[in-house]
Image (tube, rainbow, N blue to C red; front, side):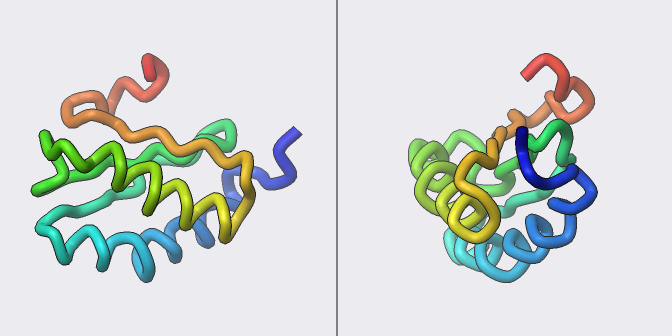
Length: 92
């Protein structure tokens, strides 16, 4: 059982994305948006230059996942939502 509720995760996840992850992604012309936290899964979307970029998988794994898992909990799941799937998170 995950030790935090989705509500408990909202503020720390949002803070880390805004202060640590978004500036790094923005330096390469990309953007990251926190869409939702549901069932301890963090649904984010990489945007801007990240869309279609061959390095976006590495960005997700080595920047987004690493930052969130090390700061909050190692079992946290991060899901990158493809553009156009924002209203269909249950299918991911």
